[in-house]
Amino acid sequence: MSALSNLFLCRRFAQRMINERNLTLAPEFIAESSVHHELDGVLPGSPGGPGAMAEFLGLYLSAFPDLRIVFEDALADRDRVVTRWRFEGTQDGPLKDLPASGRRVSVEGIRIDRIENGKIAESWMQMDTLALMEQIGAVYP
Image (cartoon, rainbow, N blue to C red; front, side, top):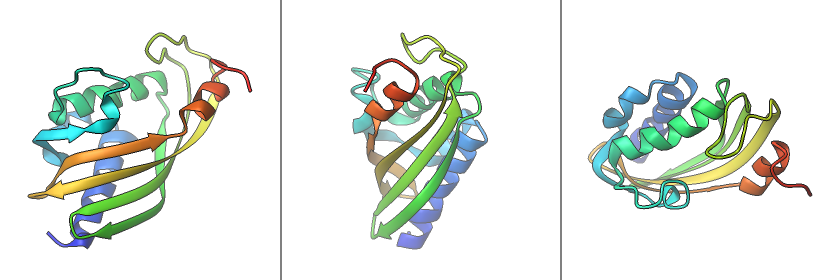
């Protein structure tokens, strides 16, 4: 696939699975043997693959039912896609062991995806978790 095709794949992944909340589409975007380095801190011992990604996204979509993700920047080169994104939403549900705060958040992050055979085969994500925790009142500045 071309770098542009890979970029469109990552945009469709975010739109369909996150913004449209269709987690059943995970196998369409995520390779069966995929590795997601960002899951280790949230779902320790996660086997990876489409199911693990759907579970990870489900945690956030349950906690933030109105969550929307917007790409601020996106770059693609060969098999890598880098996106700088922002998610916004209201925490109306628990996030793991953190109770619903009812607070609105706006959080930035960066994600790198490696594409193989038309699917996301590996990913790394860095999110401003401290800003998220401050905004929902879990920690204080």
